[in-house]
Image 1 (tube, rainbow, N blue to C red):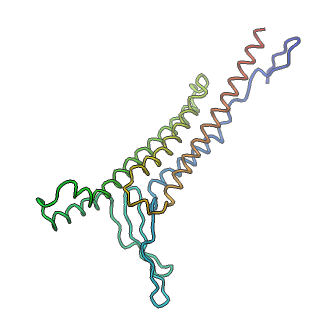
Image 2 (cartoon, rainbow, N blue to C red):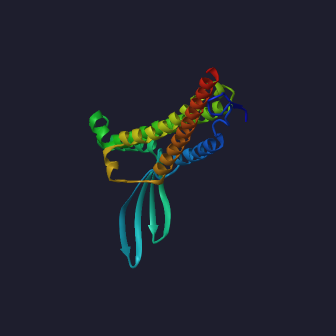
Image 3 (tube, rainbow, N blue to C red):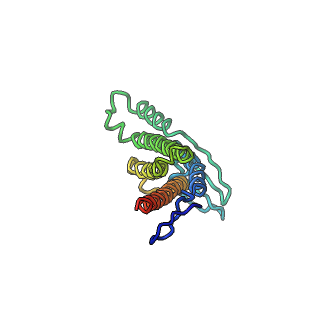
Length: 232
């Protein structure tokens, strides 16, 4: 490592090793693996809706909601099976068709239909929006990684890590937005593993980006100090 030595001044390193990219990229890659796992996880919301004891056998009925599906699970002790699985968009259409069949097309107005079937549509819209936002965040993070490995990062040191941080922010914001879009009945449901994985992925992106920004700022500050000493 070369050094600048000026009489009466401290010996200051002229060159630095730069930002340590390996741990940052590793955090991003782990987050990029976890994000799609979260998106396709069947358990974003769950609830036990019935538990009975039949002659010593514990019978349970559980509900699982993902970003795009509704599942009903039946358990006899620890032996569980998914017996009902429907796409949220299909459930809305099924509900709509059943109401029309029972009440007649002229007997149900749009407000009544929305009250009866609207929650399925709200769940479907919330899931679709969240999927798009999470995949967008993955694209932003991946683009940030590519920029950090390209020559442009020499001139714009903070840019790639700002992109990665933004990707993490989008991931976490997508979950908050999803919760905001959920219908009222989901307030009684428990949070599932899909949410937890998505949150962890977003935190990894944020952590990677913040580490990169801090290291880049330190490097820029050190280089400015060298230039200042060299000019004196």
